[in-house]
Length: 432
Image (tube, rainbow, N blue to C red):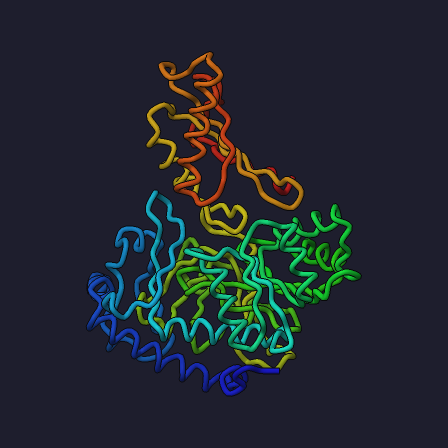
């Protein structure tokens, strides 16, 4: 079943022609009306007239996360604020978030992408979808919410947390599908076991749309065998719009709406294009975005473009499962966290010295982050109440800037290890 068969099953050559027309128009507009991109192209010695085919996209300069941060909050926007109908924001590598703006057309294309994706996995008007992604500045909740309503599904907007209550609603409302992070679904499974709930016997749940964090085929197998459902991968970043593209029923790669996003796979070190099937860094160009255009954005996710047509009949490009990152970003319970962001926050607190360690663990199905910090000698105290207050203050500051709770452990001066050369600040025990 297709949502938009004319696009989803378009001949590959016709799709490339459509992509080129959108790409050419986008570059012309940006050169003429967007100061950031105009200056970027001028510095690179590139003019819109140089774009004679889709292959010429490689002549354009890259765009980086740092560009969004340095132009905070809206200096890169191509439309005035009166045309912005929604803002979202994601955590940046410092205290400032990266801000995304959306016109009405931007929201329409985002919803269109999700309508195609949900239809491709069989979710439609007969379904009740429980959205257990976070609502608010995070793009996950509202993205899936409007996509589900577009295809006629009923939505239960539970957001995150209150797991016991979510399980009760899942039973009482006969929920058939859920959208959340894979780690949260596994956590729900553990809690359900303690409550005596058997998903096969006590719920109508059949499908799960899982993303916002890396997960493996073995985790998929564990979820499906323990819950009796089918789990599907979803992909998208806040820079693109939010979660947008999923696997189809074949579950052999994620279908990318080629009329909406153009994907390159490049060698992360050289920036040179790789052949289909070769793993490299994703670089994306959003062909339809109005408020915040995205051209050759280095996503940092590692994937590959897949060869061959999908048996489902869709001719859209497909990417393989995301297998890692080309940078040091950590993903904690679906939230992007950079070590540099943690350091930025810690160094703003006068009582903390210059040594810290980040430890990632997994308690059951959920990730935990513990940060060990050395206290400066003049602030280190034997009074328990003083240390308790300081720890609470540090944890509050981290939560404010990271958008995820971190446990803090205070260390005496000189207690943490020192390193010759590059310090090893992160210890990831989640996969051990």
